[in-house]
Length: 580
Image 1: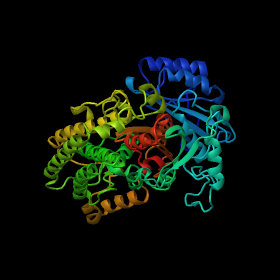
Image 2 (image 1 turned 135 degrees about the horizontal axis):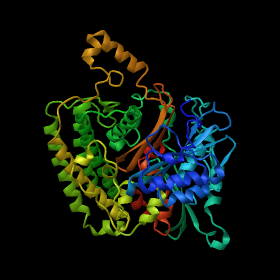
Image 3 (image 1 turned 180 degrees about the horizontal axis):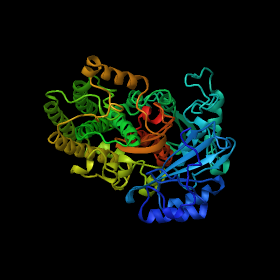
Image 4 (image 1 turned 45 degrees about the vertical axis):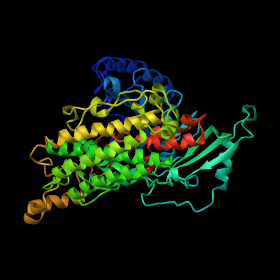
């Protein structure tokens, strides 16, 4: 078992909370005394354990003044632990002061946990997911029901006693669910909504791409109320991680945000490297930066181009996808794959740069710059485009933070938070670049921020291409890095190391880690629990668009149907990342 609540040192309050500093450390020490919190005695992260669920609402209210972001809520199953089968795990952040906190709440299987939604609205969907995957109940939740699995699903798939190969396809019609949805969506008579029209949008609607569904109550063409159904592309990524070794998970990460797959690879590998206590060589770090920024460019081009297509501007689609094609040729030259590339490895990179790749990368930058200029020329001052985008689906900075927004959607509200600056990794602190921000937080600001970020990514790539260091692309540790092919075929030691890697994989020490990267849509985080074996005990992926999308009904309230279509494209929902 990877964790036991006995691994705490509740008496050493004066020693402080590991991983916290300054005013946050003082505040956490006071909260430990007030709420009887425990803290693990062997961690570099700020972690607290709350032994009594009843104290959670008051604790959350106190934490909110120090940690404005609640980034994730998830469950971990310990069926062999007596009396307290589950941990409910909360991840908080105060990016302005570079502080994070993990709060763990051990509970029995039949215990109900107070919902955090009254303090942090971002908890809404994350608590629903914990209920869906583990059966953890949250009292006073506004809408506690399944979110990723269909309503006729039996059991909770992330429990350890649920077989990983037990799929449950939906084979029966769901008229009873649709009838229930209509009843839930129609407001009470005294709200004067009982005679309004209920319509369904998606998943067959062109703007929902076969993976999203909205139910909206309309007053004329104005949206009075909206609800969302997701899960159409759910394949339980996190369950699959538990049955594969750490490097075998990398191809699964490709299929999260498949528009920028290298970012997922690199974020996953960096999490495991943190658990192993290693830093990859400088050449590998610079390669990851280059691949991440090329990925950011094409991810933004996909968002911008398809957003314009949804509004009827088809030419922009060809411009954005032409630049994307050039980057895919670059990826193909490096590893042989285009969309799902699996470029990174735990401990470094899977492929070194071939001859001529850097020159090709410079030429690709020119193609990106050309497409970027043409897109801007067509859209920046286009009267129809601006009328559709300016002022629609706006959200304030405070609301965006409370909903858990990160990335371009948060920066569009004027909040200059970027993990490459706030928590620099892969040598990002050695590059010169700016953080574009908006003012209104509307659809046009989200478009403008992404356009500006493409420019900044090109700046970073140019600096990186001119300063690629020589040297190894993986750590020099046979217990972590795969041997070279010539060693595998040429000597018995290399063959033995290759065999051990393939069969058993790397083995991080027992413990847990949360690590995040600035992906194209925002904070992509991985919370990994290790039991010391070659496969993860628990993996939780914190997808950036999951938190953003749950705010969409509030953003669309009072907007026209056409505005909702424009807004949907501007927040860039990628179903592979959303549903996992």
